[in-house]
Image (cartoon, rainbow, N blue to C red; front, side):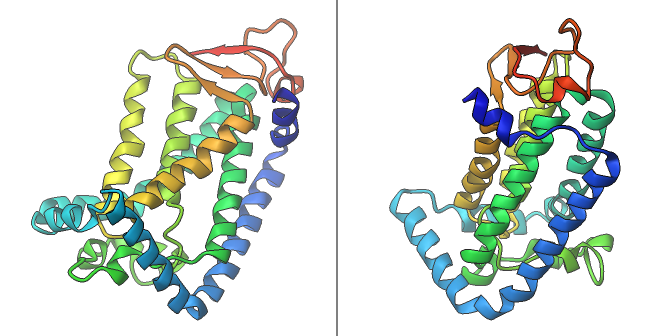
Length: 267
């Protein structure tokens, strides 16, 4: 497993290369978005399969969450801003912070995030899925009902693939943020960050943008790469087989420490 982690987690690169990789990822996403309108019928078929599966296993609660939210205008507005804002701000800011302040963990965390996002793009391209707001009778598009200034017109809305519900990267990236905070913080309050992916799951389902299974998919598409890149969570620490502890003798953050196969990261 350590050898596999070493191959999956590549070293910390120059900032220009790191930024370029993000731009390449966006181009891939844009191409998939262009193709999405041509796959509407199959995306609805997949949606009915998801609903059928959830109903069979007692997981179908999307309309209940959405109905509750639509009856509380203040919560609707808050959830619209949450959905259209945090996903695009928290993850990049945390990634930059890890780059600057926790360089010895940047490589495995960044690698896991890139692999997870790439995996999600593959699913979007090969298995389009229409969201609940398109498919479920009575579902209210609460984000559309309360437009966010920067998420309407030519804002964030223009970056959204409407037929890419599975997996939910809102949930996946929120889970990544939680792991990153727990891995890099010494605060006794750090585990409160787990409320972030939980709240994100509630928001994406209640706003009728995702099914509950999409949230599970988002957690899986991020959780597996985190594990394969060498990050292990325990109640008291993060084990990073693909990173070197800041206190490891002779380790220089951002150099050999990014690819070494050493020990335990205490948080």
